[in-house]
Length: 274
Image 1 (spheres, rainbow, N blue to C red):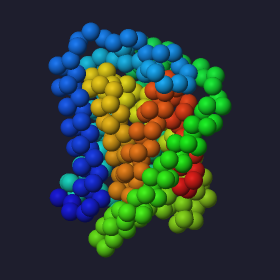
Image 2: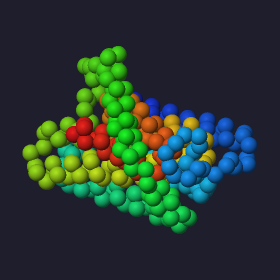
Image 3: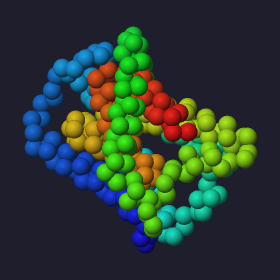
Image 4: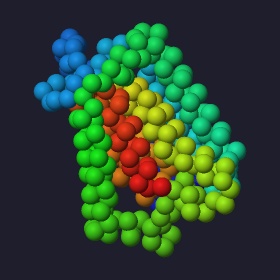
């Protein structure tokens, strides 16, 4: 059984996500079974929730569980003592496999939902308020950087990366400064700035979040999807900043009713990191 801080923080976030989802489901089960009013149409502005959860069923929870287990598989490999050497993980072949897997997962999620609703309507792709988007993305990234600076000021990062602590950078970010292979560098850029924001936002904000919202309630869904999103990056240093960003992205999805806002914000952050 791994004893390092990083493992237990990532495993703890997964466990906390499960607890939050369970509590949310219990609260929803004791509440009013009559569905609330339909979500507002896409467009900026508070005063209502704009992400519909009415098309999801119990089998979507099974799919979400499968996705979570798949993304959490490195934790299981660590427990079994079969985690490969991290020095060999970030290479051209591994990156190509990651890209293919991410697109396959995104395609599977889109196919599951498309049987019930048009992806254009599901993800709110008919976005017309681009000025709001241009303001929203930098605001989300700026707030995340302020949050990260706050963690630095209180000594969280110093404690976390101290002797025997977690790595001070994500493996992908670290690889940018170490790789000598042009193909690997190009694939790293493609993964960090295009593939990850696109696929992860469709999967986590577009699917995991509204499924959780349907069965566990709005705020439990925000916390659950954000904890899972932070966990799947398998980095203790990035855990709290990514959780904070994920909460902002879930709220921006609800605020706008469109998936355009979260991936643009996430792309901004990944571009600044790399």
